[in-house]
Length: 361
Ligand SMILES: *Cc1c(COP(=O)(O)O)cnc(C)c1O
Image 1 (cartoon, rainbow, N blue to C red):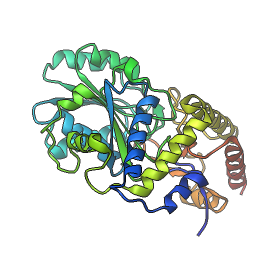
Image 2: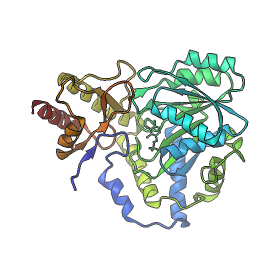
Image 3: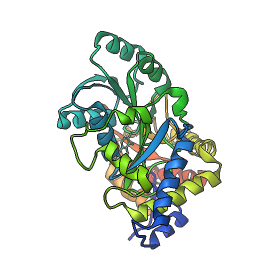
Image 4: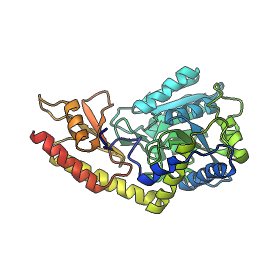
């Protein structure tokens, strides 16, 4: 087995100490274990700058999509109408969720290399009074664009609608002040910027909005309200929880704090990202985005060479210790490099050295 570091948007490279936490088999009804869940929930609220009076955190088994599906199907329910602002595959996945659940929805498509325009969203809300909820992605991992949730929050909350944000690939790596923005539901998962391993998603919910979800869900296991009700009692998850993942996540949270919290992690990711873009440009690579680049993941265009093969490049780099990521935008031939996780400027230097070697060959 080749051991390599992940330059992907999650799962990502975690620390040895986070991985070591998973060597213990924990009992799910044990009090110590339930307290770990409760501590995680409190810590997530603190990171999001919200009070426990106004907000609560719910952990949900499954990957990030399970969390998004849980929120959309529990919050919008049978009587609401969802407006989705999409500029990438994860925004479009919200439409798929809405379709499957038979929710009433409308989707506004924006180009993948542009951020959703708050004025367009505001106009849509004005012309369609049936719209009750608006959802969007913060960092669209498809391209690596960082969307402006603040301007959209103004348009949505100013018109009394519920605001749902998929902050999967940004939460923990980019500061998000949920209180200031008035976000009602924010979704992220264990294996992104908190730097845990995959296995559950988490949802930060405004309490009075969560209360409205009672009885709405069309699914038993993804019922956000029931999941919260169970967990709120004593920290026990409704159904079997991913115990090893939970222990690793608690450790990852303490390591985030030790690093200096979100501002310091943001600074490290930003440094990685700026260095990556500068060095790749020096090698002749072009970025897909001109503006609004996130410090999380970057999309690069394929080099303009007849002999270029992504597969070949991927293998060459993997054999030398790093896994990069294929592209996902639909309008260009691209590949992606993530710079989150246990990744430092030395890794970026090394990676770009490997790219130079590959191009010379
Ligand atoms: C990772 C990610 C998700 C969730 O994807 P899963 O494969 O279900 O973990 C959702 N939205 C965004 C923006 C993501 O980056």
